[in-house]
Length: 121
Image (tube, rainbow, N blue to C red):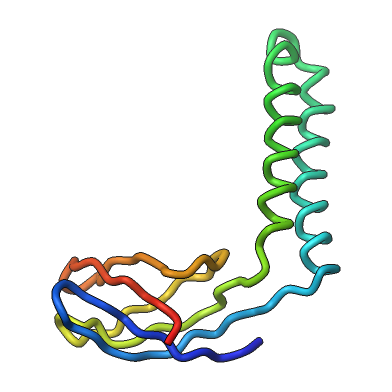
């Protein structure tokens, strides 16, 4: 886990600063997450073979989805754990939710409903 400085940008030229906690994934962690998610989808594909009518379309869809999830999870190198800062418009705190990290992060202030773009400082 590492803490990084972030810049919150609002409409116009308004800015504020905050911080975010980022988890950098090792290759082993990325493979574990990818194989776990993909494996559960593949297991679902096998289990749906036992269900009449559903077994015609569910297994191929689940297997295709498992491959897509595998590739996407392997590409995730960082996870956003927590963080935030003051809204550039109203000054209230904007909290970041735990998610896969892709800069910039787009969110909405829950207090004033304005769009906030969050970038690494």
